Length: 235
Ligand code: HEM
Ligand code: HEM
Image 1 (cartoon, rainbow, N blue to C red):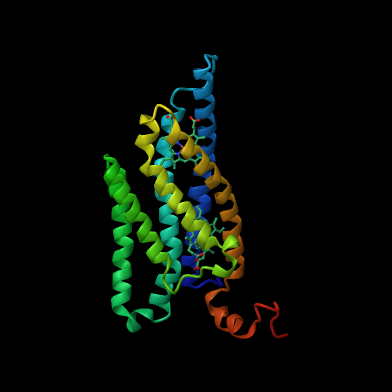
Image 2: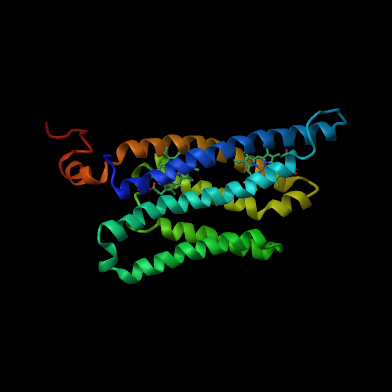
């Protein structure tokens, strides 16, 4: 096998995204379409054969999916942060920082769990903000490769935006059901249709990143000798 332990760790995030995340997204999109068709047909008095449960099924999967996306982002960010800590001797240089960052990972997960439990608008807002802040703070660590000069094709920025959109989706669920004028429902449809497109782009950007990252034992040679601007390596 040509892979070391740290290379397997990098593979975990894409593998979970492909095996768990994207199949769920397909189901959610199909159920979303059926929910809409059913609602519109019922409202106009048309007969339809779509089951009543599509809305609740969409929600049930959607709630799981949001945690999967937050989890995937934490895993992706953890790749850079923890591989520097464990494999590149980061912990011995800055132990306090890494202990604090580990707490930050935990605090983000706890905030997400509390977001699922919260009912009043205020608490949903607070825990959604805390979860989002956790992801952003972890994402702004120096280890994370952000591709800021090419933000429009950055797996990092798309990942953060998608994570925020999924946290927001969880936070507004009761509002979608309570709002008789469907304003929250429309906000949800617009934002998550954009999210659907971004998820598709995100998969391609992730695959590109996977292609660009060298194996751990090749890294010193490649980043030392290859020219990434002129795209050349010594013969
Ligand atoms: C990218 C993923 C998603 C897309 C494209 C999407 C899209 C939609 C669409 C088109 C509808 C139907 C609106 C209508 O009645 O016209 C809907 C309903 C809804 N969505 Fe999503 N959604 C997504 C993810 C989520 C997530 C993650 C959650 C919650 C955590 C969620 C919660 C809901 C709820 C509560 C409804 C109302 C269902 C009902 O009427 O019973 N959605 N969504
Ligand atoms: C739900 C979809 C996904 C989300 C929300 C997501 C999010 C993230 C985030 C936030 C990061 C950390 C920032 C960075 O290093 O760029 C990351 C890293 C990464 N992701 Fe994804 N990702 C998703 C899907 C994928 C897929 C489908 C692939 C590959 C096929 C992939 C490959 C990678 C790679 C290679 C890294 C870099 C890991 C490292 O730097 O060590 N991602 N992802």
